[in-house]
Amino acid sequence: MFDWLSQRRRRKAGKGGAGRRSRPGRKPVRRTKPSAAVPATEAAREIAVARPAPASGIAAYGFFSAPIGIGEAGRRGVDALRTAGVPVAAHTVDLKHIPLKVPYPADEPGAPDYDTALLNLNPSGWLRDAAKGLRQTRKVAVWHWELPVFPPLWMRDVPLVTEVWAPSQFIADPIKVATNLPVRVVPHPALPVPVDRTLARDRLGLPQTRRIILTAFDFRSLPERKNPVGTLKAFHDAFPSEGDTPLLLVKYHRHDDAKDMEYLDQIKATPNVHVIDRSVTQEEMRDIYAASDAFISLHRSEGFGLNLLDMMALGRVCIATGFSGNLDFMTSDNSLLIPWSMRAVRPGDYPFGEGQWWAEPDHDAAVEALRFVGAASESALAAIADRAAADTARTNSLERVGALARAAWLGEPPPPLAGEKA
Image 1 (cartoon, helix red, strand yellow):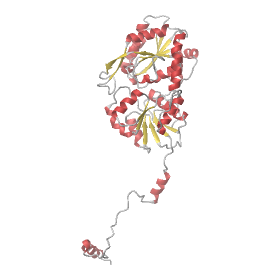
Image 2 (cartoon, rainbow, N blue to C red):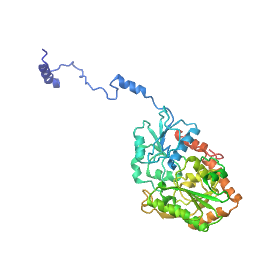
Image 3 (cartoon, rainbow, N blue to C red):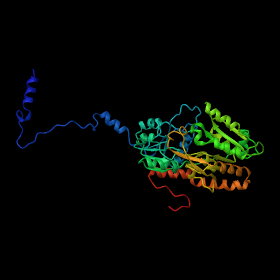
Image 4 (cartoon, one colour):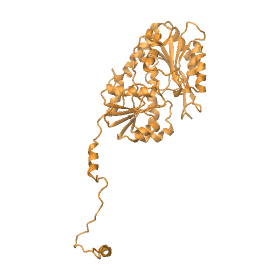
């Protein structure tokens, strides 16, 4: 029998050179463990071979099926990239609490695993869940924000991404100040879909002869920011009596809580107001746009202003507070901008709003602008509306935004506008 115990004792006694002979001048060989980085089995090597580097392109994540502003913005961003020839695979983050869904081509079987992730998700659990399993090392965020200072609580999610594409300069500036992330401004595109005005009014049950001014808001965006009460007061003071005056069309997505119903009662008590207080399809929203002659937004702050952009692209006169993200495409030449004064964000007005400020639009100026829209000739309104349509076609067309997004993806400088020198 092999005496393993005596052999072990001899080896122990030989440690330090007493029991083991070595050749003169030759250093003992030191044995090391194999590196953990080297695949230990043939199966591991096969797995490594089976996962090639991702193809060049963009894997986009967002609320692509949701009938909300950030969902629409994400869909348009993907459309713009595809228009510019960028390979994109869209992956839906489902908002299960919103039953109405928008049909959109996403989550296609066999979609390539592209090398860049585009996350149309604000800092949140949704962003953390989406970023958790991503293979991509380049993670681009598209973030929306409506106040001048980036929320400190969002800083914990900043390391999840490598860069930001901001829809407006107003959003880009606080991100640049608060983080070390590279930030590019890549706006949302306008998608004007012309619809016959007469047919649209017929389908909505609206009068054919009255001038119609549209306003739209959703309680998910919080009423203090959108300021619908300011719009109602300005409209009431501009047109206090019933009769052949402009009609205010209110597109209002309500929720059945006490505060929401209080707002609804206030809206319905205003003379010359027609309310659509439900979720609508994309086709119905196009009818609402087409039926309207003008749009008003007396917001206290906007990250971007998609409704304003769409109405301008359709050739409609827009009245809006001259503050925040909408100034990227609105000017005193192509719209009616309302002056404002600085106002503190009150406690409870907006998430992370403590210590921040936003705009208080001038009531008298808003009344004057509404009266102008109500009384002006068709040619006077057309002069403003035509300029708005031309400007937005130049700065926010699907092709223009696609070119900006493609340049951002490739790391190239933004291409110049038509007529500008490179």
